[in-house]
Image (cartoon, rainbow, N blue to C red; front, top):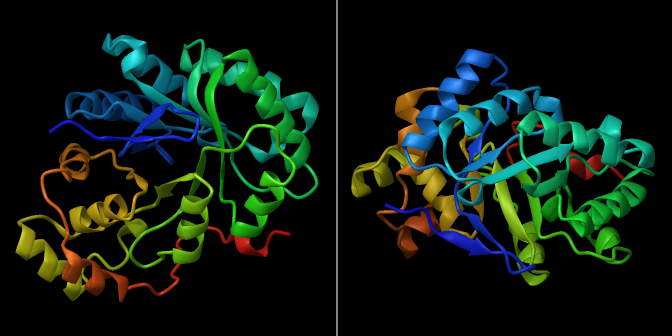
Length: 272
């Protein structure tokens, strides 16, 4: 089944599931992971400067023969490159590693105090150049977004944050929806936390799916773009097989009750 897309505020579209590649640093494993993912229908690939695998993602996509316009590639500017003198030069290195003239989405990886304002201005320049079709942010809270929206020339189209049934962040989701910002959900499977939850097990049985697929489908139902990460062929195939069923109102109500504000990654709410 084809992966649906979501329209971004800049009128471009993003596939509603992507392959996360954090921690896949081994060249052979990365090449094989991307190869398997492409076979299973993935066209959206999420990497970052700090992941240290842009060069492998680029090689795998180039070797695949898939036409560039059919791919959606995201990378992120790491915090050490937020200085005005480094944003563009580091991005140019990312492009070279990815073996492409442009990325579909470029994100600032974290709301670094004092530097994020000037870094965003450089992001705007990059979008002006056409080397990034869309720009956005990652790990931004409402307060970070409010400040950015109050001073930017080009608005972010995406905010990529940790999001899953055990960390639902409803206030952030509503704020982003109201501001026309699409939320991407990283760690949508909560690093396997709670996969044995009885509610997930019950809904998995009801729909003939796995608990992981229920978690990913929840991300889709609330309007986000999940970015599950796996290097296991079976899991890669399973994680994209979430568009042939829907969760009903009672399902969503049961899943809403699982929200425990449980983070498995860093907490950006402490950043001023």
